[in-house]
Length: 290
Image 1 (cartoon, rainbow, N blue to C red):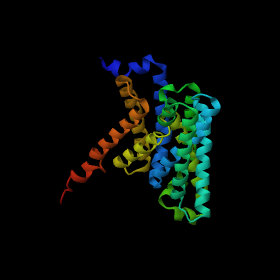
Image 2: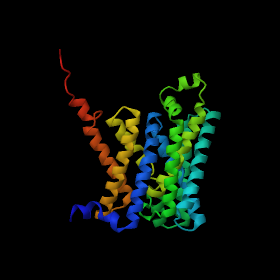
Image 3: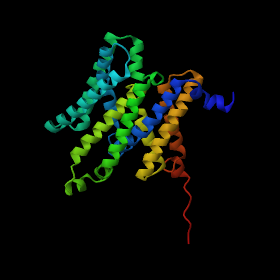
Image 4: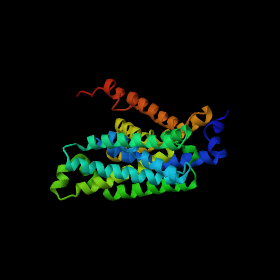
């Protein structure tokens, strides 16, 4: 096999591979920067909780559409995810529970309910598609939806970038100067949910958070500068998507898990070779003495 056959032919020959690659690039551009901010705000596990919380809405969308309609499941997942995010915030403010505890409670209930709905009214194959995604089955309408979510995410992040960064590093200062921190927090949660819905359509509810958090962790190992971190996260997510699709095509593996495993391998490499990893810790160059 030539290099062309390995790296380019799958996308040249098959439209579903091209659509899957474009979807991966869109998710890399939109979801991975959201993952960086989640990590900076110490909300990494909250992203995982919300990715499971969208499952019952996706299951209801599946039942209404009568098939694995990505659009119907995406709309249902969006409603369910936003509902869980808002309910968790309300519960944390009217009870002694912290927000992470209320998120954990709601996400466990949502995950169980979603699996129950699909298992009662669908087949085991349907359940596997919902849990692990169908990136190779993405059609043009679903691709348009993912692209629209990515575009909206980038525009909103550009508009709220300064107060969002300030809230990440010094929320007390934002409150002191009259900044509306809770408003930006809600906007950010909405961005998290819609990007998880976009990821869910490609990677399933169990893998949706993978292209959001793993590239963010990779970026933190390579740089401490926030703009550079956003770029590194997006690039590493795009590389993971491309490599995962190529490997899954040639070895006949499930595409969604293979993409996440590609990101995991890149993360492992970063732990060893990145400046903030083992290389930076044990192989630092000595300072010159005058």
